[in-house]
Length: 350
Length: 83
Picture 1 (cartoon, helix red, strand yellow):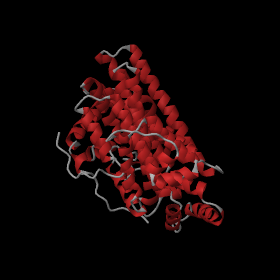
Picture 2 (picture 1 turned 30 degrees about the vertical axis):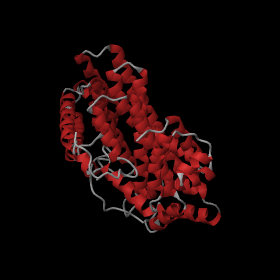
Picture 3 (picture 1 turned 180 degrees about the horizontal axis):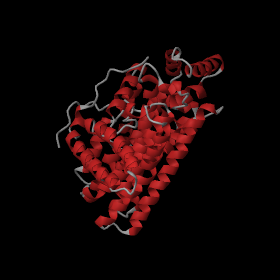
Picture 4 (picture 1 turned 90 degrees about the vertical axis):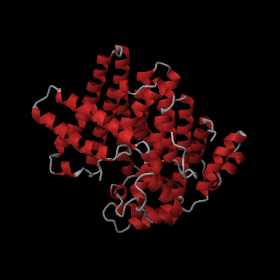
């Protein structure tokens, strides 16, 4: 069982496409200027520019990066204005692009522009994007009068998030060689690897906008739950989304697999374990693994957990009491991500 | 839709991880599982749970189709570079 033919985007999401394209253009223009001013030799600058150019093209073709959207939108939801959060959105975008590049390197999924380069260069670019550029972006907030204490807090937030994401990514790498991975381990890994990243996107905008702890934490919790739900959807895609499952080839222990291994007993469990080992070497058994996982209830369990995280995200967003029109954009974002989808076909226009 | 209290949602996630009986019941009918396992929800919160009824009533194939739709439709999904 595998599914690939679905619409690219929902109609409702497209309502915000022009706005998101404009945001994306502004964030990448900011990064262009930032990288141009970096005190580095031309070769290193060119390495970063080349990569950001690739991402810019993709991001403008499909302008929906949460790293761009969340910091700007949360800032607008608190203060009514998103412009002041531009450096924070640029910092989040660098972190996202750097983390994605590392992830692509680890999973042998590099985009074509990197395949002919030395992997050491990929590492260098990813490390600079993930570690250094967010700090340079945050430093730009000084120019608009952000107090030093807030700059320090933002800087610490990025360091803390990279640490948490790194720990989650490390668990993701280790799980295939561990004997027993529980559902709890698996969820905790998703919370560290992806929840922390999306919590940062929301928290960076909120921390810049207000010093009210309950508001900042409500947005952070919203981001975390949204990010975990997305990670779990990604886990399903990683198994059923394409003919060749990259997650099965990479031996990943994602939630659908951990659920089946924790529930199956006897011969069926042994069969699944054997097939998972064989699936790392060949795609021949991928369909049988998919069938065993579905028969074990993995699809329904994962859907339940996605649904619960989506409900939590909705709850945290309501607690944050976002101003309009940012609140409306967030609610549409959540509705578009809802499992199962809303039954209403047409939403009143804004 | 009225939101369900966050602590209730967290408790359901934890119980679904640790208790196979609850898990089985929740996947089939979350509303009944919530009542059977002692969670007390307001009438309005229970309306929120109704949305899960539609999910529970879907076939595996339909759920997978929805999850794949979400993967393609979700904004800012990780892996924008992986085309």
